[in-house]
Length: 496
Image (cartoon, rainbow, N blue to C red; front, side):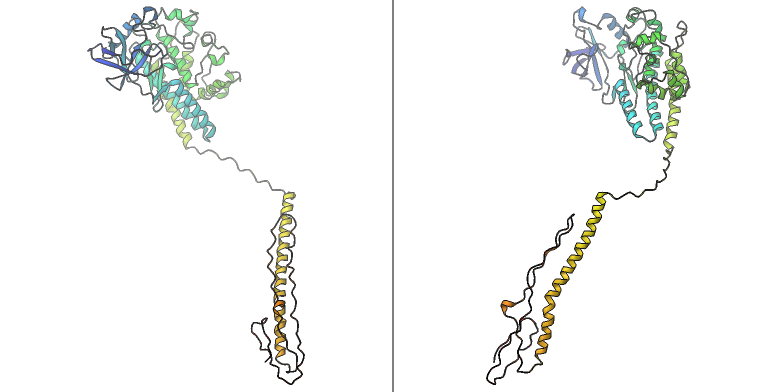
């Protein structure tokens, strides 16, 4: 159901100044109320309760007890930039002075994301970087350092609440946001907190309930609806949250149980992870039947340091539920700070270490291999090409000799004709029809893989010039000798 408050006017309870409710920011089906922009300040938003104006049977969380609790919270001296909290200036009422909601700082959701999304993104990045990096130790330290920083942030916010005698109550991943840039934690769902003097909350989440409650109340709701939580109940839930952050959502008790009910695992199982940095000892705890979430425990548990391990063991100890002394938020914050310092030192050292080179393998002598059929064909083709080139050269030489053969001998005959007497016969040049034509050049045949084919030779026949002998004249006339021509083949003969 969409919000019914959009574009409606309400007033600040403190000074009756008007506030226009603008665009709805969250989903229609979200929680106890809708979140809206407001006109007075872009840095603020308003939480408007769905039960306002509805019949008593349909008001849900909009009860006289809830309204009184928020009004009491607004009178407390309380301010923290990372905790949504209604103050005296933030209460909104209608024109009749009836409570409708309250103003709170707007969270930049381009920077902050739900913690579960942050942890999912971090794990995906870790898996990807771990597979591709040659410096795997550095990647592991970097991943664990970020998780420890988020835990330290949350412990700091919870410690602040506890200093004011306020319990977060419904501790779980969904009730805090994390900056994807700085990893600062931002606590939300403020109106579910347990606030003094007597404002309890009936909200609870499976997997975060202390074993002393589960052993007494089969239905935990029967307890929370009538009884206030204690510090020890809160500190158990806080330890479960920290374990889940570091171990990718694993429950400290369900990792050793096949039960799908986390409450049953808390009630029936014993936490026995050893205070040891030996992975093999941690692995033996799971009887070598490792699931993906247990594998992360085996990697991370030895790295977090003995101080943190001892705090978890102390928090989950069920040997004396009547005299509980679970670690406080302040103890967790100090232990996280020490562990971060240790992990950062290891990370920096890993960053400076040169990864060892893989040993060079000796070269194995290459054994001569028999020639393949492709290599034999290639060798044959080379030999055939050489033979083809030789044939082309011989053909060219033959053509040249044929062309210039007659010119060489014709030159000798003409020289002789200058020395004969006038009564001797005259050598004449051949008739035009008998002229020698040079043979047409034959282009070389293309090279192919098969045996080369010898190119055909031009069929032009080369004939020697014929000697023409004229009969001697009957009269005693003088015969003129044909002059010698420098051109060789084109001399002419004529009678005077």
